[in-house]
Length: 501
Image (cartoon, rainbow, N blue to C red; front, side):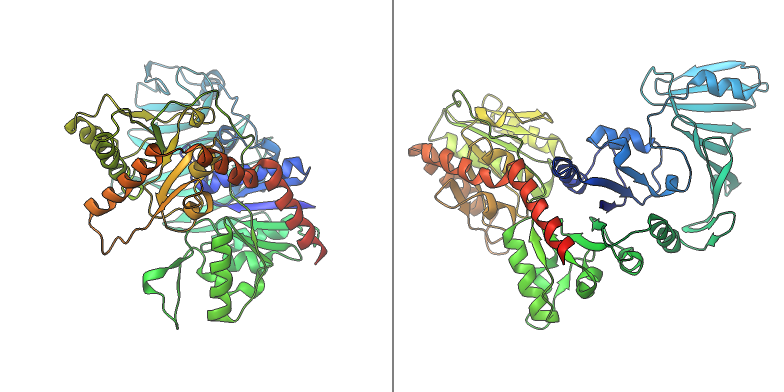
């Protein structure tokens, strides 16, 4: 049996979907499952192996759609600048060094190549661009051999991509992709595929999926139909990673699905199972599919994260508060800052550390400065928090929407008291009101910012003015459900149930 996991792309700043896949990989490895992660997007600029290894995937687990039809393996980049220059067979007349980019001029400086290096000051090449008289003509991508070449022609003073050639290890051509704007034709020796959908369908056909295999789809936008029609006898599951519907435009007669999931929900009869990250979302989705479509598909709850261990402190810093998130407007970290400033007027020992990076960092820095709060509120940047949470007493969340909330899970895994808004789905999963903290009621359309901040402030004061040791105990109890062993068991149960149907 092979479990195939379907995604689009991957980058240096990966989303929660990629991290969910990584947690899944860790669980599946414990079960000794044969595991593959499929990436369907054309991935530019980096060797796909660099990106997947950086996140924690193993080379043998990766299938990149575009490389699948060649005999080149997923492997680290190893081609050197000298190997590229040897192929050039021209005398270099000038060199420019820009760290990760090196330029080599030849032919009286009319032509030059641009070597994009794997890392600054490295001699390992990821890709090379060939420029003639100011025009980009070709771009080659490398791992341990050349993977592919892109060809360009000048149009409207820009380089227009018109073809990609994909190679085998020995340099022979595996296939060509002919490109016209957003449309592609894929030409093999004995087959021509006239769009991306048929390209993916051909790939699925080549996988030779059987009833012993399982396809788990993490992103299905625009490919749901292709996956359903070409899955063969494999089991097909869809993971729900976000809020799956729009509540404000849903009524008794009509539901507006999240467009990422609309097709698979409308064709739920063709899906063998769905996976939600929380029991709350599972129950909501079950009720909606029954109400609007009279369908009762199998839906499993499997958290998208897990805890390798529960982390316990020697001591916690008294009156210490922490939050961790992207510094984005929807996370409302500014509300938390203002609430802490107010709470400190009554409890001057309070401190607040904010972990994360994002577009609102400067605004938050200004807010802290304007309130002369630098002595007790700190922007701590992005760090590994695994052993950091345990030093604090209280975790704050300002988010008004959490599909799961990895930071919430990590915080209860270190036994913190918790405060967050009473919104689905992550907060009520990890925060049990008056047991390990407080769920703060919120009505964004009816309450002012000042009223919301006052409510957060009140809960902070309630935590610190009373004995809160039992909150730490309850958080550890909640965290037990999210240990790696518990998640491995959930995956094992799903695989066994689906395989035996």
